Image (cartoon, helix red, strand yellow):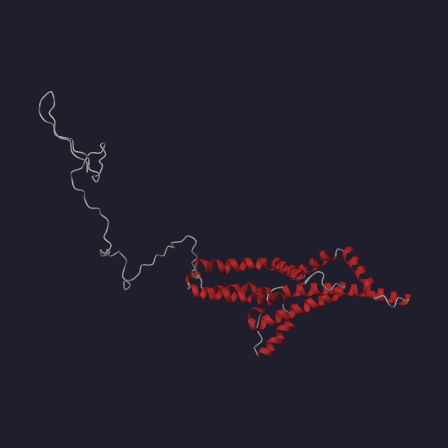
Length: 291
């Protein structure tokens, strides 16, 4: 420790001065620019670790929850029932309709007749895979859409629009949609086919074609379409059959027994089909057959 210096009188006053206290090494150094605060510091307001937490305003499990009808997420998808019905029955009806689309497309539209004719044309030309099955099916679907578009508009205006507005139920919408389809099929069904299925179903003979039930009308219509498709295909086959016979007789008479007639007849049939603009004639005849 440092020794304190003794007090010595000043030559001017003769009063002894107090020796300056030497700062202690362990004493804290106070910054002269910061004044000392003599007031006691307030304790910090940090929460205690062991203090009990305040209960939050979370509703109890037994209290009823208030569900908002407005979706909180703008990307949320909500399914509502058509015509004011339940969403569950709407989903069932839509899924059932999706599974029946192939059957409806084949049995209630001109799709079957068009596809049969296009397959006959490919066989008559002697082409096995050209055009492909996908191409022929796509062409048949497009032609079917062209023919059925007016009926689709009628069904949409008479059944779908009132159903979306909640004016009718789903059952009423199906009943209304069946009326234009019945008129279309009744126009192209043969009376002979209707009589056949009426006899098999043991139903009384109706006074008008509109009184025929769908149980009889659907198989009679598809049978009539099959016959019409085969009739058009057979007529389409005849000119190409003549070409095959002529080529076969010429190659046989010349003595070209090892040369298949198909090798010569196929290019000739293609040339004939392109010279007469066969696709234009065929599509035009098919469209006119449906008035």
